[in-house]
Length: 152
Image (cartoon, rainbow, N blue to C red; front, top):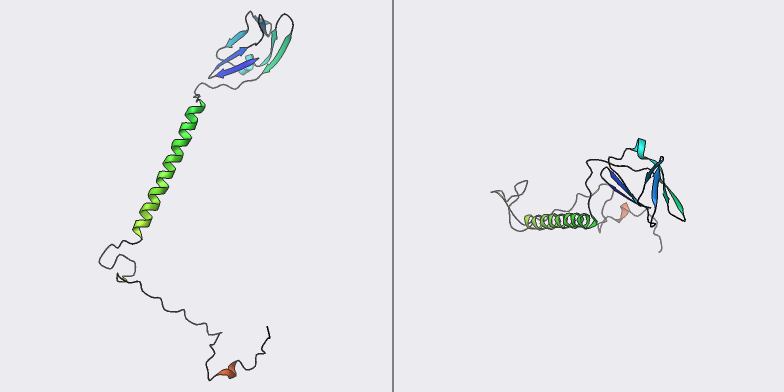
């Protein structure tokens, strides 16, 4: 059997020569049966292809819809490739504009939040030291004198 479904039409083709297709005691004299407006309640079931030598049985249960759109593989591939190209273009544009925006300044305050002047970058001061860790100074070794030295 060869089964083709298109919207609400189901076409059954028996691939044997000189055959009949039977379903619910209805006999189709040629090897192709076209079922238009397929309804699962009355058209589901066993179909038999009978040739002079053999009998083949097919149980058919098809899903059909009126508002479906059929797409061939070339159209689907074209849609996917176009979507990828558009996405790639958006990524390139976003990268280009974000790269150029880093060096731009805007208003009278230099274009940055906080009003820092334009020009050379401001050098950040060192972080505030943690009071738990006191630095060793040349004349004040007694603070750390009680610690044992470990030999590594």
